[in-house]
Length: 150
Length: 128
Image 1 (cartoon, each protein chain N blue to C red):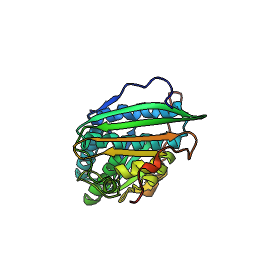
Image 2 (image 1 turned 45 degrees about the vertical axis):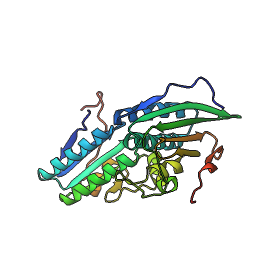
Image 3 (image 1 turned 120 degrees about the vertical axis):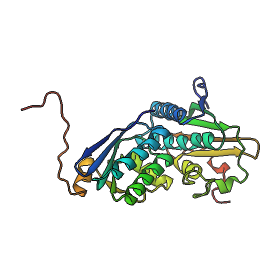
Image 4 (image 1 turned 90 degrees about the horizontal axis):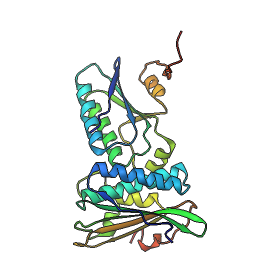
């Protein structure tokens, strides 16, 4: 369901890299025809996830792709790192869970902002979070892969 | 690293935050505001964020920490001009700016601090 050629992955190793990720995501969301609110939600979500990759994963990358399903256009982002991984994903998604940095709203907050959210992580195997948002609200392809409250 | 300029108007410190902030810029702002308030004579801090398109949990935390710092230093903080899309995003994330009052605009914030200031844009054409 990808449309066009995949863009190069954006490296995320520092707070300055996060700015480039936010800018690229904003441009892709505007290009896909998102409302200003949805642009803002998607950019905020990827900022949370990319910061997690920097702070907890020792740096990583963000792949950004415009996607299409039927007549609906969307944007998909894959944020990955090769860090220590997450042992208890359900706990990591809980508001207030923090390993010492921030408010513990990053992962759970990002999930609430987007249409689709999935996370793939295990201790020693890094973390990959895939999110997507659609110009047509409610079109979801893989949200259910993560139980909300296991 | 960019630094955000601070503007002093009587007892009020005005911080005009514009555009996307690097984390380091936000941290430097926190230190600069603390230094300015502790230097004396400032009872209110207004952070105008009408030019900020994104407030993620990191920036939200820094804004909250600035408000907490200022409270300890004896000044009250008002965050002014949050964009509607930013407000919706903050609410959906569950992020609250505890400790800071909010105002619709810089002008409204000044009024809340007891200063009646008309904030108007000055253009090159304006004049007597």
